[in-house]
Length: 339
Image (cartoon, rainbow, N blue to C red; front, side, top):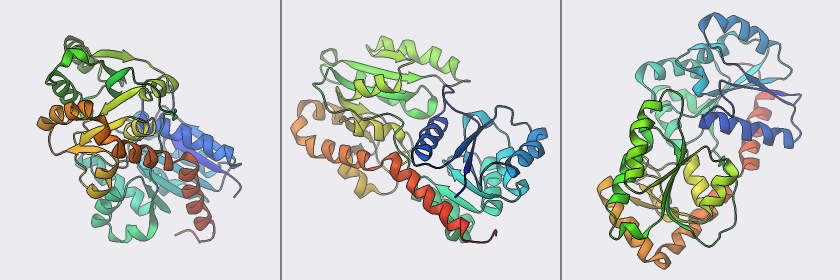
């Protein structure tokens, strides 16, 4: 194929997991020799719709890949409307979230299902939920799991017992993390760290939460680079990431923790439960986290097979494999007429 344009509303140093995903994916496309243009805009007001559609219709590439959602889009519906107005280009929409979006957002997301040539989901459960609403979507969609935005390092002698890392945000389970750590028997004997960044709009939340974490004896570290996070994780015994809506393949922080040799402790997956119980340690509710973490700290050999399986799983999901999945979709679209 001649080229590709990837559309995003965020890219590093913006604090946005999807923006980091886009950066890693674009880098991998370029390593594979695909001429890739990053179309990054900050202004997503409705009055920009036709302007952006014209630019993308003239893009130096046969395919336009819209990454959704990203923090930079805000509440705009321009990304969802773009496939309707882009001409002479095949449009592939990558949908990182669907079921967790508010009702109004799910309605507008259906515009991707109607007007994009193909939809890429990052987890099968998200595709299944969308397909219940639009049954024919299965014929025009693919699941490509995400990769880790954090590089992997070999296992080192631990100097941290428990770590949380990710966004400092109400949806990430930080309160459950702090509660579990505070309830540990012999708490003072363990080194605990919370590593994260505060996304725009959540400064007040962080201002209230961070002192509470520090009061519980948790070292809070902000602004760490991806390389620094990898170095911390490979020297960590347990990554405690109690995702409120459960473990899934969309958890880039979970992949980073497992791939960097930490034992992942989290909440039960809502799908693929039998698979995830082989690669991480899960409990059904927050009240059981402290007991499980304490047992894992006291009996590491008992959990070593799970830790090793988690490491193997995470490292199997490479960015090269992710990019290859996209390239298969692009090649298929090139061989088919526009819908």
